[in-house]
Length: 225
Ligand SMILES: Nc1ncnc2c1ncn2[C@@H]1O[C@H](COP(=O)(O)OP(=O)(O)OP(=O)(O)O)[C@@H](O)[C@H]1O
Ligand SMILES: [Mg+2]
Image (cartoon, rainbow, N blue to C red):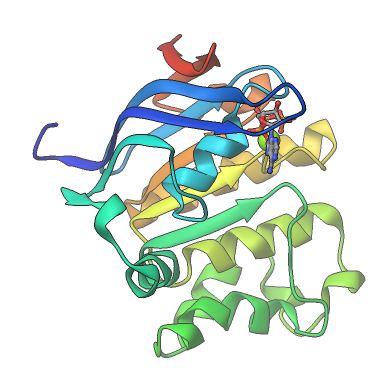
């Protein structure tokens, strides 16, 4: 591992029990993410992309191998440390947006700031403006379009300035043109924040916005570009 790695995975394995006794999804996977990098993971449905993101995001634990965040062994963290990592160091963007329906756009974006005891102003307004949704601040999620919901989710993921963002098919529920606009704004916002982005995607449109493209095949990553 180099001293600049934000995250490093070595020999990661994860499988699931099934009727046949179980099958391995990740089989000795290695990954290193440098600070400020945007990296795409592609691979057929069921290849293990979400499984990998869940491990990197400390939402799941590997069966074997080692994960390090800034040189710290994530496997040694207790539940409190894992929760603190998810709250402070991570931002998530999901295919299904996952906004809280009873909160406005501005309140959704302010959530991670509140959880971290950080002031909402001027960060929320700044992010809404950067993503072109300032005029929607007081609307509720069911009063805005899918693309606008995903911009809100992106603003929320970035609000507390996490060093690492994880995105699982962030444009999967958007039409092609909207997806293209959203990924362009997502990339600029991530670069402006200097954050690292690890993103699972099926969309070729996304790949031009990434510094590296990795394919998940037979449980391991292969560099494509
Ligand atoms: N909780 C679980 N229990 C059992 N099997 C699971 C579980 N989660 C995932 N799997 C299996 O692990 C494999 C990898 O799933 P995963 O969701 O990581 O794939 P993916 O690459 O994200 O697919 P997609 O592109 O469809 O989102 C699949 O065969 C899936 O059925
Ligand atoms: Mg998936």
